[in-house]
Length: 97
Image (tube, rainbow, N blue to C red):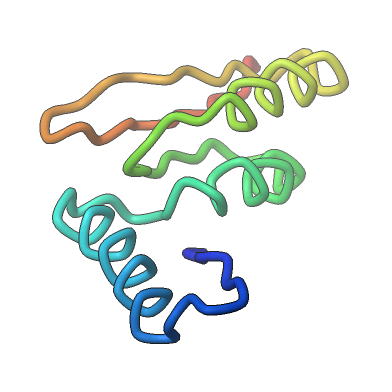
């Protein structure tokens, strides 16, 4: 989930440090799912047909876009984004029955 781009002359140690910093920043929040996975896992959770919730360390535009797209195709699914303490975002999906 975390990455850094290398380029000619950029030491591998610097790349590792950048990735480590990204991981530490996420890990310190205590969120369950990292931001890049949160938008990707959403469709699989929606297709289970069951209510779900998870926390992520950042609410990305991809996550917001996927919520809008998924709820267009699955109109009986209500997905909410709830800000939480420590910069955590709670994502809740509930099926309307």
